[in-house]
Length: 123
Image 1 (cartoon, rainbow, N blue to C red):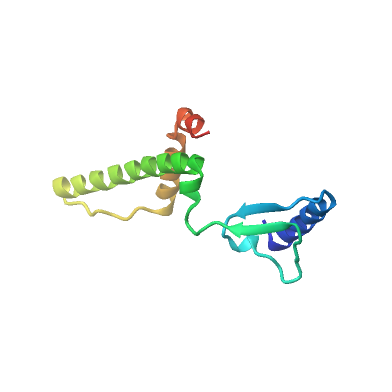
Image 2 (cartoon, rainbow, N blue to C red; image 1 turned 30 degrees about the vertical axis):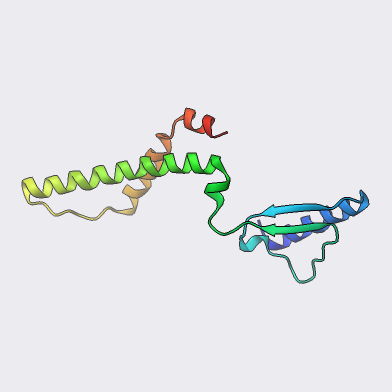
């Protein structure tokens, strides 16, 4: 979303609401792209911004799916670190850093491990 597209949409929606003599309240994310331009005046729309960092609390879909994804990712990451630590204790090998390729692999595997049932239950 771009600020200009958002503002154009709001102007058209406001015009449509005025034509129907309706007044509406829009609840939107508190994100920079949802800012009002100085030249945007709305007569029939009131915009209220949601508090920061509330998406996962207000959208259960995000909360369930994202939490599942994060749990899967952490499991893979910790499994790697435990294995590296065990190798260090047994063989004296360094703990070694994880490279970006490995992180991306963990992200892909974590997403693959989010079950269809989890996604379905979040709706």
